[in-house]
Image 1 (tube, rainbow, N blue to C red):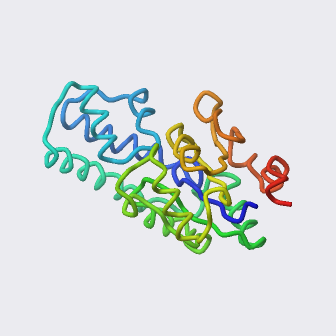
Image 2 (cartoon, helix red, strand yellow):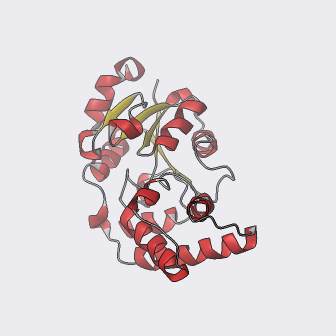
Length: 220
């Protein structure tokens, strides 16, 4: 039986991808690095430090851990400042409706995001009340595709992975859900999240009715 829902944040509840891109781009430009949208796509679903490493590798740069962390923190300061502009109008279409529906039906709901700014984003969206548990970049040490963040969320919900449905927009996120033994819903194109148990192009299509229809044996 499905008793809990676990949501990634970026690309599922809201789309901060452009804000992340602009922050990384600013940092890259300041340091004379090559950075474009193709490289940015490789950062989807991974931690800030792992993203920093992808950019450094692309540019053939080797830095010690302290220097890497300092640069990652500089990017984060740029990004966090941009979050002040977010409002409750910045939910992805369909996301707030699904969260509201889950609350009405009494499902347990958790966030399972690699972001260390998840609490700030939820506050800007006025979304904190929809979540029983917040799993974020501060909750575990290993980022996706390790399943740790989803296992953390399930444990805090007092549920088994098989009782939870994970919503993800990143290939690594779907990988993490599958490795952890969770049921999965992919949000996005087939070439990115087509290996999820169920896939929708957008959150607007991912209604509770459609999800229940697909996993009907797990909701009956």
